[in-house]
Image (cartoon, rainbow, N blue to C red):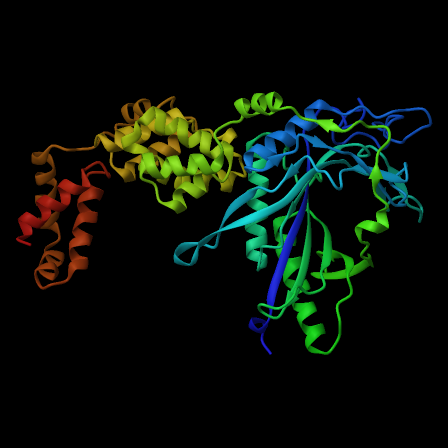
Length: 485
């Protein structure tokens, strides 16, 4: 049997660390990189007599997320104790939410693939709830023993749970990327996957098309999009082969080993009743009044979906271009600033430069767009000079290089200093063409014999003679007239 005889079913649980300065139930710092156990307060480790106090900033970030995905923000939600034993959970329970989460429902639209095969899909979300993080077990440099770092204990998390709507690893990665971009866009999470600020758990099962859901296995703590895709692909193939060999799938929690590219069982999977959830007696129900929601709504930036639609409607961009430019708020902000400076008529040209030369240079230099040596205003000045025929597009690339290298404050400065202004005088261009035709009789004869490539060669010679300054459209027009073709 082939893989096409099976349908893959995937749902993701994502833990986004909320970017508050202090923890969700204490005043301890959430800063990353401190010495072990320097940021674990008495509340975080539940010393006798201490009481948790809810961080208002964490709640506001949850509201912000709920509004961004068009979800229901609960007027009343409840914190619960999730009971289990693990060395890095000093209290013996985790404060989370179970029956009444702060956010319910919502959707995220993703774009999967590229080119003609690309398609859009809407992924439904089940819920998003607030909870505290656990500590971290350390297994190195302890003379054969393990250590516990409780700095992360109590760090605020928003656990975002999707419906099992995804049918391939490509869809799962597209969803994770879209969610990652959104939490950064609305500024509730820094999205740093290396530091554990954005972690994915993938619930994966397979079934016969149209049949009942299969038994799922949960792949824990995937901290890169590449690992997410590799882990799902391996797990899917493993499950299919096991079922086709007559075996069964046992519900389990598994880990992905990047070195081997394989998943391995960590423990058999618990169900909700195994955690003995019950309302936390130390925390009152969380009440969110409509006025609070309205205040948070007023502070939201323009969201990616709305900005994408505006770029398509107002600027005439393709869905692909608009999607690319709104993949991150930083790129969208840069692009918008460039269009504002260059004018709406140059929106498409600005898009081409941002997605093309600028993106290539940033990638090569391993820079974020916020650190670009070429500002949006400088790029707009360059685009404007190409549009008004002061320089050609080819010369524009030289000007861009000079701006990148800090050789001038603006495109106009560089054009003037380096004498790059485009030659548009018909008489001057005609004189150059005459010289080229006289020196390249063979190419002239080949063109008149029907070889179009010879014409391109002659154009190249004219542009070389003008040091790239001749207006290409004029060169083409005058050259064809003189050659009679």
